[in-house]
Length: 190
Image 1 (tube, rainbow, N blue to C red):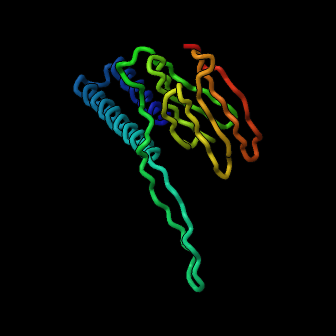
Image 2: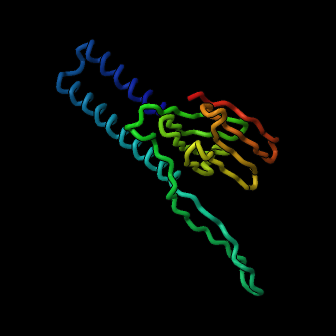
Image 3: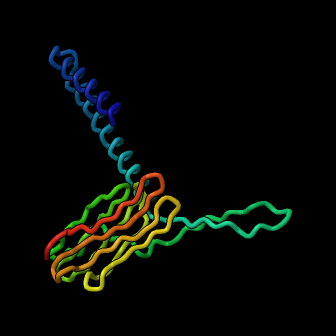
């Protein structure tokens, strides 16, 4: 983006300078401005394609398994895409008026999502080291728990009601090379 903007700025400044010195005809100015508009369109399209590629990259999860080793045969690993049927909606339900966004970090982990205080529905995405690990859905009356058992992180996160009107977040996560994180945090009062 920096290279594009600096090139565009130089071209715009040159056009302005030549226009002031009357060295460009109106036709030449229009042509140059047309080039700038075309470059803007190309840059916008390139940016959109990059964003779509980035979004598509995050839409799947892969499970890797090693096949049973047979004498005289190579070691075989299989990578299989797991469908993400439990995707977290980009935004909470539109008709809900009492939705609170959640964005909370603890150590290398983070939760992002929403709590609908009228229905007590919750939708949370858990990330560890920036990687999307799992989605949590449910109702706070029952509580919502996510357990992780990964090479770099193990533990549990939980959202629950306390005292009938307080939304709490409990986490107890051990992270290899980074320590142990444990706490109960009050997120909001309904």
